[in-house]
Image 1: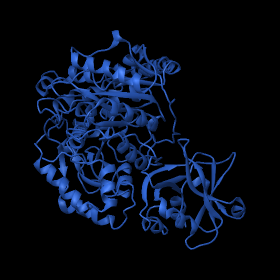
Image 2 (image 1 turned 90 degrees about the vertical axis):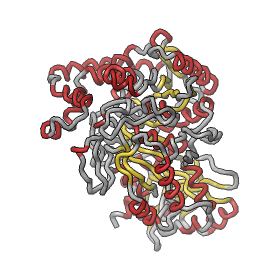
Image 3 (image 1 turned 135 degrees about the vertical axis):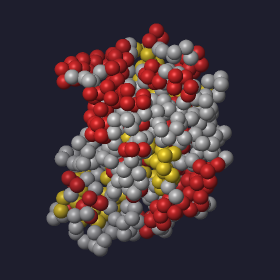
Image 4 (image 1 turned 120 degrees about the horizontal axis):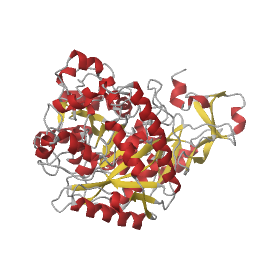
Length: 593
């Protein structure tokens, strides 16, 4: 079986160079899946005809940020026209609309391959709680894959897709990443919409991203994020930087728990040494409030939220659940309102204690899991061993933190080990950058392949020599009338992002086509959506020469604080122009006219 990683960067480079086509890639992906051992990865695979309908819809829109990139979807996330089962056949239903986050990816050119296996109703961290079969580890079939986003992680690790969506309430986007030698991004709560995602604990749920590298995870995050008015838990978050040499907090030596796994203990010590070499000081801190917070998630009344998510189904189908899932979720009707309030009070106290950590450190680093178990061990003791897997993960969402799991070496038996970097909400991109550096220093290969980790995995706007990055906010963006001026010059999209909140945005008279004007201000500005494109240097002059007054090229500050060449407007031209700053994007304005 071909397990060569289908990284997003390598695919887009191949498309730009004309070395392959989306049709060829999809045929290769389908062949890989057919040739792969049956590890119970998929619940529903799309037919070739279904997949090719998405390819056909791309047409010539080669500038889309995820053009022709194959991906998988955890089967508690909706894809229009394909059954969502959440790992329970009796629950299956066919949604008319895709989840918001899935639709964003489709609009960006990504190609869905299928729906992946999971611990039923996302209740588990091991991957065995599914009537579709226990998902096997990508390195050794005798071991658990991690869960609950089991199939998504294995699909990425084995090179069957470029990236996959999971969910992460208690560690489901991090534990499987650690067990399969891939990157798992758990965004800040509310950064990605959960509309169209079956809740586990709705107040804590996140959509997570699995990828081979942090750079690929960043590309997906750039497309998938955004406030969704239909999701009550969606929120606007400003990007928060980390210091260049962050202080990295780790559990005190006497608080580390590896359940007798000497290899994992050794590998975490090595990870601490590497973190000190590539980052700042590594500082031991007291994890007691974090571990107590972690216990609240399943030992406290939050299990009632899991019950609430599927209460009507449980009452109508009392015998449809996996036995272990029924034991856990079924107990959710027992906590009282009094217990719920008491737990909230204690959580607030623990949040205050945990907040004090950030005066001493900038980032936390923990094992993604304390050990890994064989499938037969997990089946024999499913609740206790699963609980062991969550001691380093369960506290993160309760404390409103962001996290990224990255590979960090291998046990002597060849099974992967991973670490997770954790920081306050809004630090997602900074964590991706730090995680990329640690990944490169720690792991020799990508996924299950023998392909070395590339030395260019750090995400950002770095582009190849001979190109100039240009930020666009109007008619030159993907799919809009003037985008052809870029594609004809062999330019390509790097990423989507926003400006710093220092700009006013106007619909400038004139055209066709109508164009916006971006003006920097000292106060009263907003953040505006932009696309950053790489333009070949030899064509940059002719591109700029075609820009009409009152527009021109200057330096634009992006939300991460970096400066990029981009379109600005002379201030005199907006005196009588319609201000559209509140809309936040040119595409939002076009929907109104």
